[in-house]
Length: 165
Image (cartoon, rainbow, N blue to C red):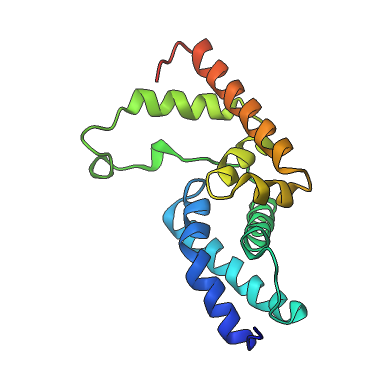
């Protein structure tokens, strides 16, 4: 089925905008996540014409664009990656059942992972193993293996910190 670019773009927007926003929100504040999501889809629109509306692995492609937007943003502000800053939360943003010490321990354990490992964990929550493999240029089984290794490393970091989840 041939699409005109606007219809195909609208379809990508409807399918992935919430997932792309969630991907950015896990790493940045609301405003930054919204800006980066918008930039991602501006880039998707810009690049879309060169693909003539025919993208076979659209989810992986859109997440690749998002990953590049994220990397460009981090380079621009010359900042290290932030998973989530608990210091930025006001008291009324913290749910009553929220365990601040546990969340802080998880953040500290995440900081022990490399930037690439944190990114892999984040992306793996939204993509299948096949799509993660496509994104990183590896097989689906290699992607599953890498994700499991990173999860084991995170679990080890938490154990060293004597955190039991």
